[in-house]
Image (tube, rainbow, N blue to C red; front, side, top):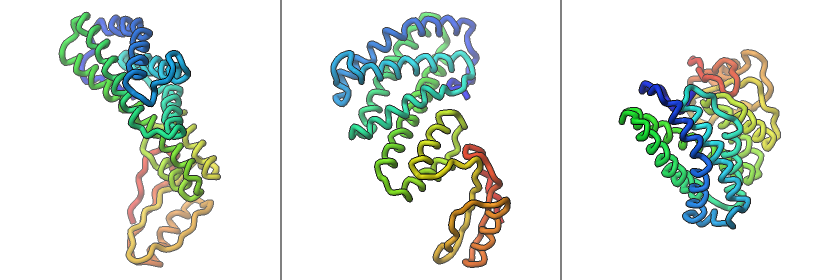
Length: 259
């Protein structure tokens, strides 16, 4: 789904704005990289160094993808998602919290909005559409922030080392209600490898409410319908209610059947 939702009618010369904005990307990237280097101490490396190169690459790819979403519904680019996940992963490896990256994202947002506002005003777009563009930009930056956080979280889990913690995180990731894409599958495969598990083609969600100690159920390869058998067994061992959903792909909808 596009991050620029079509709630406001698109002006006829939107493509002209997008073309103008694309031509401004190199100058915009240079301004953002320089401002981040000057304002975020964690990124104050040598001018033209590797960190600045990575930031410039990330800003360039993200800017082009955002303009693509303004032009119409555009599927997420897994390469952009992976790039920002890798940046989040690298932040933890270097001992950083997400604060420096988020300050950098705010700087990029400010400069990007200035460019968009300038060209939108030049083309005399309505205030309503300008607000729509601003909302779309903020939504897109939030999307990038989530990808950075995902990479940072993955690095955190790998750093913990304890197999059970890694597996718990993998289960949480499998149950996330997010769109299926190549970047998500890449992340899941990496987490499954860290957990020593083979990524399943399908999962079943088992939900149990109970009283007293939770029964030992064990996790193993299941035949069709076995999740329902385990739910019934849990009811017999302890008073409560249980339900199991049908087999779904890891990113599919989760609709447990109550019993």
